[in-house]
Image 1 (tube, rainbow, N blue to C red):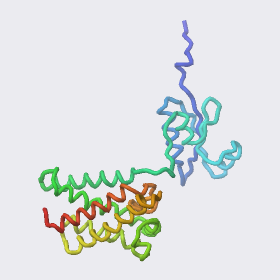
Image 2 (cartoon, rainbow, N blue to C red):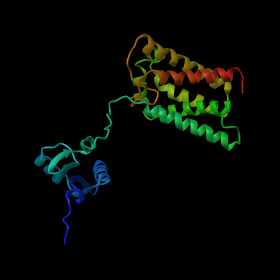
Image 3 (tube, helix red, strand yellow):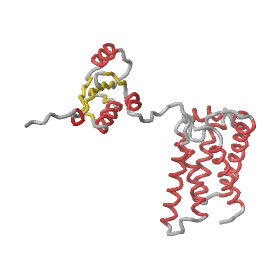
Image 4 (tube, rainbow, N blue to C red):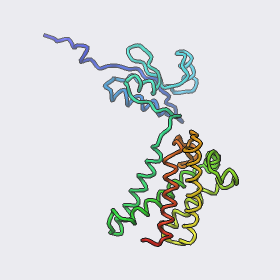
Length: 254
């Protein structure tokens, strides 16, 4: 006797329309296909292989973007809509986030530990902390140097010296990078210590004034000019670390 399959045993089906052209394969289409398959759907994958075909599809379904996903005959929408359909989080590009800073601090800590381990020194030591601060300074400077103009523009929102001397905003990443490198190597302490004290002190005062006295809500330029990191504790920590490192070196305690 033949047993009919129940609905529970039938694979769920979804229809996906995505751009697949010689010069472009839509990454969100690939992500949508993977997500559907991961959720147990059998995907009917339709390729839009030309700009004309894509435009005609958009006009026919009155949509502005691709990919587009259909489940049970109903249009769910694009990739973000599909994530919402499954109850998954969708990132807000305008939302503030500390992720960039956490990534920098984590990589800085791992590099400091790696350098210390290579020299067969105790991993938990003042030397590791010094290296962490110096490396973090260099990593933060690297992010600022990706787009110096945008960083300098955002920096003008709160830095007291940059407001008085605008070119300082473009100089700051180079000063931070140079001071970090010299502190890491132990070279030219007579130069690195004053530079770190100077930029760190001005930065700390500027952030404290803008955030804790004037109560302004600003984006932090600490990880570059395109970040959504809120100005406040993180930027203040960056500057305090520089000042603390400089004072430590100035005192000659190693």
